[in-house]
Image 1: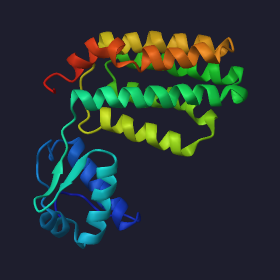
Image 2 (image 1 turned 60 degrees about the vertical axis):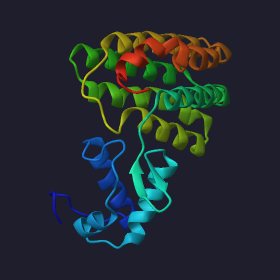
Image 3 (image 1 turned 30 degrees about the vertical axis):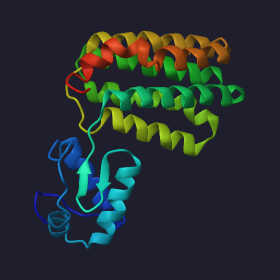
Length: 224
């Protein structure tokens, strides 16, 4: 198979999904591009069935769209998409905060504080990949306490839509440092047992499009 990409022990659908995700992340497939199904099948040595199955998953995640009689195209992320995603994540994460109220322990607050300190250190050293990884883990600390796997999966898929395809290799440090400060506030509220205020802060500040809009418009410069 070309491009140095090798199949593994995952299902064919998962392998094709990973391949297309990699193409999106590396911007070898760009918004508006048509996906040449025959070329992908030939490159990977697979039939169209696992390819279409992988594309259906990518469509449900918002990354591609099927156009009747025209083919499959990479979807552009719009400002309205970001506005909608922020509203959904804010609602889901705030509900997770409340649902996990009875499971939250002091060690969870300690873990969140440590992750947030790691995020600041990653920012100080221009380590965006490290920052992003710790950021996901920070939020997962309280999301997982909700005990809702479907909620967790939806939130992760939406964050992939925001950040992964394509990945941005430069930080908007003012925004990221502000996020660290917001994380500190979330941690303090949860540590104090004030889950109601923490849920409101997550929804109405941390994941509020109007609050974050000035940063969003810089980070996603050029989209409308």
